[in-house]
Image (cartoon, rainbow over the protein chains, first blue to last red):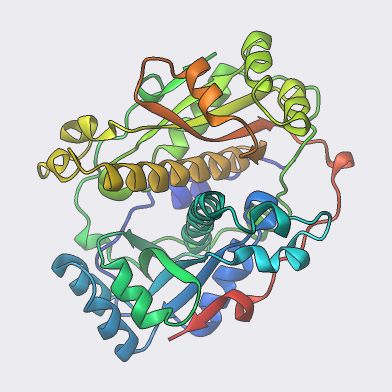
Amino acid sequence: MAGKLSDAALDTLFRTARTYNHYLDQPVTEDELEAIWELAKFGPTSANQMPARIVWCLSDEAKAKLAGFASPANAGKILAAPVTAIIGMDLEFYEQLPMLFPHADARAWFVGNDALIRESAFRNSTLQGAWLIMAARALGFDTGPMSGFDNEAVDAAFFSATTIRSNFIATLGRGDPSTLMPRLPRPDFDAFNRIA
Amino acid sequence: MAGKLSDAALDTLFRTARTYNHYLDQPVTEDELEAIWELAKFGPTSANQMPARIVWCLSDEAKAKLAGFASPANAGKILAAPVTAIIGMDLEFYEQLPMLFPHADARAWFVGNDALIRESAFRNSTLQGAWLIMAARALGFDTGPMSGFDNEAVDAAFFSATTIRSNFIATLGRGDPSTLMPRLPRPDFDAFNRIA
C-alpha cells in the first residue's frame, strides 16, 4: 500500500505521455538502459516467469539489421531512434523457474504443454514489455512500440539457434514534442467497462 | 518528454510495489474504478485498438460467480478481495477502429485474418491490463493478477453471446503488508538483456 502519485507524475506516465515516432538528438546510454531494466524487472509476471529476453539495438549496425525486417514506415523510425528494443520471449522460460520460483516445481507445470507455454510466454513477455515502457516514462524517456515487422526474419537474425521468439519492438529516446499529432480518441469508462 | 519521477513514486510503482493476495478491509468505490480507467486508457495499444473489455466484479454475487471458476487457491483470493477485474478482449475490436483510428481503413487490416485478430487482441488487451495495474498503483491501490481460472466457463458466465473472451483477472484493493512473503528473485540486466 502506498500513497497516490503527484499530478505531474500521473501526467508523465499517462495523461500527457505519448507514443513517439521522432526523438531529440540525444543518445541513450547503456547505463540508462540498465536503469530502465532495474525498475521494469519488479513488474509482476505469473509465477515470476519473466519470459522476456531483450535485445537493445544501440549500434548503427544493429539498427540497420532490424530496420531491414520492418515495414517501410517503421524502418525509418528505427534508423532514426537512439535505440530500439526487441522484446523477445523464451519458449523455454520454464527452465529458469527452479531459480525464479523456488516454492514449487513450477517447471513441471509447463514441460510438454506447448499451448500453455506459448500462451504464458506471450502474455507475460507482453506484460514485461509494458513494464519497460512505464519504467522508461518514469525515468524521463519516451517510447514507440510497434508490431509491424517480420517476426521470423528478426528471430533468424537476432535469436538464431535459441528458443527465443520476438514479440514486439519499441523505439526509445527523448521524444520530440514538435512532431506529435493530436491524440486519438480514448473512450470513457462506460464504453469498455462494466460493473458487476 | 518529461522529468524523472521522484524516488517515492518509483518505489510505489516498481521497487516496493508487490502483488497482493490479501487486502485491508476497505471498500473500493465505482468512482475509484473509473479513476483507474481514466489513467489506464491513455496507455498505448497498436493503432489504438483498445481491445480490452473489463468486468469489475464488485458485488458479492459477481465475486462468488467468478470464484466458482477459479482454482481453489485463487477462489479464496477473489472472495476476500474488494473487487476483481476480468480483463477480456473483444475479438471484433476492429469494428471500433473507424472511431478509434480514423486515419486509415484499419478495420480492413483485420477482417477475415483470424490469426492476426487473435494475436492483436491478446497482445494489446494484455498491455491494457498492464496499464490498469500501473494506474491502480499510481492511485495508491494494489493488485493481484492471476491466470489460474477456467477461461471458457468465465466467458460463458460473463461474456455470453458476445465476441469477448477472457484474458486474465486481477484482484484490487489496498494491500495488507502484514501478509507479504519475501520477494522472489529478479535477475540483473545481464541475465535477460543484451546490447547489440
